[in-house]
Length: 428
Image (cartoon, rainbow, N blue to C red; front, side, top):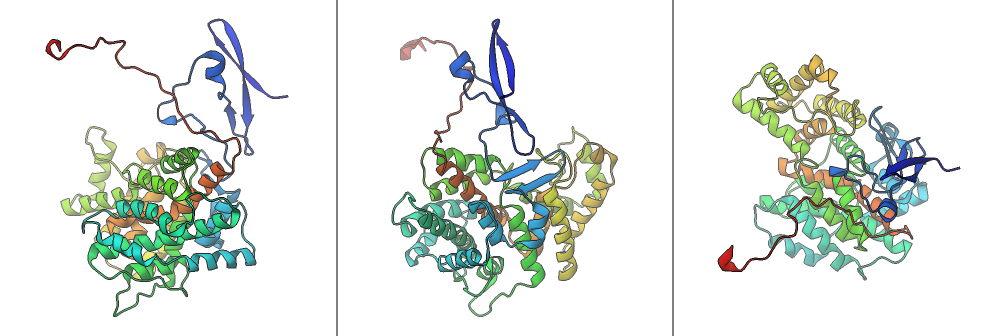
């Protein structure tokens, strides 16, 4: 028997189904609320609204749990590569040897950009933001890579998914090279995913860049931990666009644009900007921490706390260890990284932050890792987009495969002017 909740409006009772997810989450099904009652719900910023039922990612913010297709993020970070995680998210299962080899071959075959696409990079201003280039170029890929705009078979989808994951990486590196006036580096067919990206970012014609195992591991970890995160701003955007029947590349391009915002994908940049401010102004870390606790100061401690996690961000636990290992192996001298460690230690020891459960989040440690690797600040969000691409593809597929899918169309509560008389120009 289906559990229900009773809603009473104007003395009339309505029974609303209560649904339970596989992890015990309960949801009030209001999908027929307007048709039955004439009312809508108002939930500004969708903080309490489930926009879909999904099989891809599970989050328990109270207990700091994150799973991809049921597999704990801790296991995936320790044992899987980014490419294997991408296959898990997109196709629903961890691949066997044959599936893994076949998908890696697809990635390799589709890594290079069509020769004519290279002309597009010349059309952007030298100071164009890499996220603008990435979004535009992902849309352009479909003109070169898809025989038809819409994917109609499983084989075509596998190839398109592989092409998008491989070429997003190539476009990102090429946008950086164009920005600094260096020749675009071709992908190498003998390198794994993360190492290949670093090669295209940092190799020059007279010297190939060879990533150390520690650097490659840290970047692979970064990508794995950013591969999906449930119904966030950019993923919800991908699903919204996909619900209208838009193709895979267009939908992912929309996700890139949504990710660009400073409150979403730009959060790891804000961490480095905070550290730069502390360094340039010579502010003692203890004083900055005190300022951050004063709401009137306008000072914020970036990279701490999370809207979903009311406990330690499970991704941050993993990236903290990766950041510690990376910095130890690199023996680099960077005042900002020293300040980051001081900030972390001071905040974790402060009762103010502990009582409010404001722990370092994934953006804090990812910013440290990307800076240590040598990724420029304006490329941070681009790296986030590379990591999130498999998740976006998985959510597009979930929309595409749903025979009952309808176009997303949120409602609103109108609070503007009532019926207003139109006045001629002379009477206004």
